[in-house]
Image (cartoon, rainbow, N blue to C red; front, top):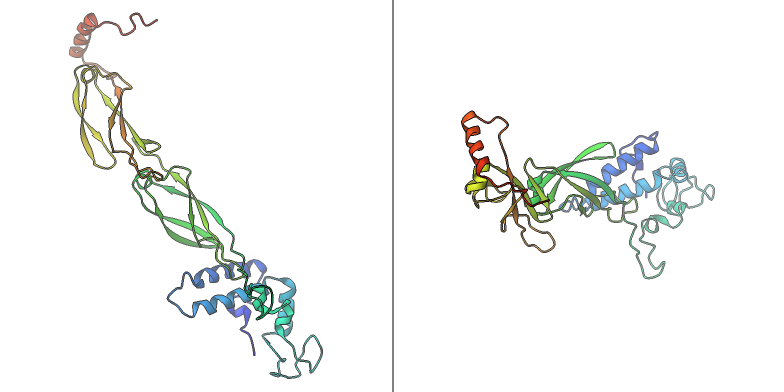
Length: 305
């Protein structure tokens, strides 16, 4: 019987370069992989043909012999079964095209001939893993969500929607099974290893599962105490009580308003870091009051040194 035209299977011309064959193979193998086309019963057969075609056309010696003998496959030459077509053994000799590849396509793709080998089929080699980097917004990394990732595969751009688990850390690596290189031998595809880069937030920062945010207050609020609005990542703005006599740099805790720890599944806390801010330009009335305070205040450096 005649095998498919491998050039047509890979959608390339007979003069295609090795690079063109490889790019077309990667594209078609990914599009027709049975794991991708689960609802298409014909996908497995197309995928098998793509693997067979690439195994031949990617090997210079096998490609030369294939170009010589054409699409003849199985017993006999161009004249049909038992015909006198051309073949390695001379005119009139039956030709098994599978023998050209040292055991046929079944053994080439890890299957083995019936009754051959030890213990039947051996799993075909897996495709190569692929590494890439994905940038994730701060809030998506903290609360979970999804981002679109653009990948260049064989000269074509592919967009994947990647689910981001809540609490993932900067520099963490995610493994996407089956999204790497397709196996040229019909095995499982490799994996996609994504390194996460978390984009900075304009006022939040993370320390593990804890969130930190700097909150500026006035000297009067620090001395007398106050109630101030504070942003949170999970509940919007909340009102926080600043105790009287609060110093700059003090941390006030908001329990349970941090980030989920992906290991323990516990939620961290949010710390409000107090920053006492003095205006650069002080009105004269305020300056007079500051002078009065300076006469009453005891220096915090007294006895310090």
